[in-house]
Image 1 (cartoon, chains in turn brown, cyan, blue, purple):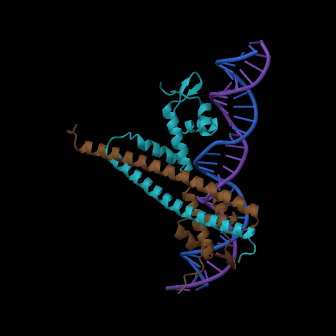
Image 2 (cartoon, chains in turn green, orange, blue, red):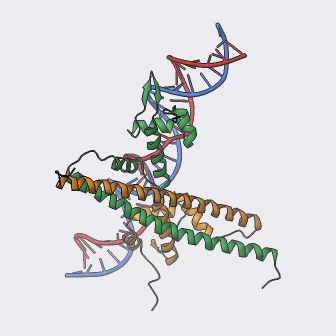
Image 3 (cartoon, chains in turn purple, blue, green, orange):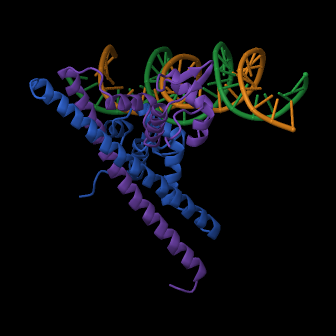
Length: 132
Length: 132
DNA sequence: CGCATACTTTACGTTAACGTAAACTTCCCC
DNA sequence: GGGGAAGTTTACGTTAACGTAAAGTATGCG
């Protein structure tokens, strides 16, 4: 009944549409930690989630270092007060950045709509040359 | 009454918090076309807007090539039907990408909120060790 | 058995987006 | 007229994020 618990590097590469080189590179950067069966890498569902988070970060323009930081935020290691406060600070910074991105997206969306409208008008003008 | 109509490279660099090298690099990439007074570059309000668009693109993770394409979308050059249709296609692709980014942002926002909550709990637990 | 397929390591190559340094001109100011 | 301050060109350097190639190992299959 349970979902498959391990993945090969090729499976993940196909699923997320990246190369195996990319996944190995992420391991080099300590972003994923696959187990080994002999020489061969064996990925866990946790590794898969990590990959997903990295790729989502990429879509938002985050560097790997930033994505690593974000991922670490979800598993706070040090449990002392100052580290927690510092973490909350970083979280807030990310929220601010996301809100800026939201504003940027809305503006860009509007401009794309306008550009599309101008296209439409240009097209109907081409089909209707007599219309003033 | 009218706003200042020209800008020096230093002014723009300060306003947008980039180096002059960056602005000259964008010129090299044919993203801005400042006039010249002698040797010195003189930027128009249009150049300033272009700069703004580039930097907004950067915040959304766009490459300079992508931003260039976006900017050109707002000033369609070729007025033949096929070009207009191709342009609309690109516009739609960008909209799809923006919508994906929106979903990514919402998911990430939620996760940041959760992480923040866990921080809060950990902090109150630190101040209230007796609470089970 | 031979061969294809998928995996591995090692290592050099590549592109984008600037950084940085050197050496020069212009303009303004006291 | 000497010296900042801001501008210029030219050119080599740097970092991130992989690409690409070579050479080897393991595994299933007809």
